[in-house]
Length: 356
Ligand code: UD1
Image (cartoon, rainbow, N blue to C red; front, side, top):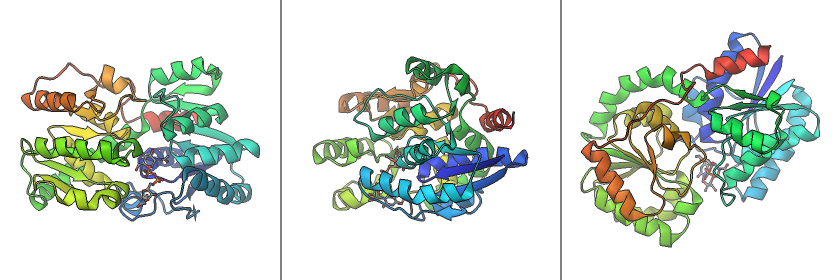
């Protein structure tokens, strides 16, 4: 079987890497297409090196743009590639614009599509990723879910259960494989950043970082929390570009740094006392690692990280953020457990199912 993988943005890379490896282990022919949605070395190249993903066979170099422009450019550049390469199946990952664009192209030229990380729903249609999830799942021929809430969501949306496979979380496959390497670099990183006890922040969602009336009060709270525990903030280029002057005014305990590679970020997560984020994947990684996670969003498409894991949705309630931050530091933690099938074997299950 010839499988063509489509990746484009940072969170795709850690999901595609283990599936590529598992399919290679079964001898399938594979093609890797990078749409170029993320193009900075710190958002793309470093992940290919660290995750040992082969060099892409094609790069569509679409770059940034409005959602419509980016999605349309991916579609028009991807169509001739997929027609020329003639795969038996195209695998798309997660919920970024590259995911939905490739699924749309394939569905109109009768090429089968598999969606990895299917079925997640925030029920918040103001999130571009929710639109991407809904459409990709409607178009996909085979859907791989990371948790059973995904299966339930898909059933509710009328998707035939024969097409749906609960396989577990592929991103955790990468974490399990690379955690020893991340641990090995931690002491060097700790010395380089002069760290002792610390927390970690990531914020990049337009809903949090685009609007001054939201971002600035949030930054003030983070600035004050960092006086209690130093906070490291590897900032996404969009956050950095927009707020460089404002970020420079923060106290030195709030350390804004360039985006990190996978291993460095994983090492910091593993040793952080608390993580504050609006990312999807980090809610999952902290749950696996057992690190308290405070999510600055009103909802999550990954509810299992709240019901079983370490995640607490604080929304934009700064009082709640402060309270939960203090609770995390005091060690007053809820009982948590690792979600079913987050065991490092999800990609092997996918490869097994596709080979059948
Ligand atoms: C995308 C995903 C989001 C994911 C995030 C992870 C969509 C709709 N969103 O958001 O789900 O959580 O990636 O990182 O697909 N930029 C750079 N360098 C880059 C890429 C982007 O400077 O390599 C800047 C540009 O100013 C760009 C902006 O970031 O306009 C937004 O990039 P885009 O790919 O549109 O969305 P993300 O916010 O990265």
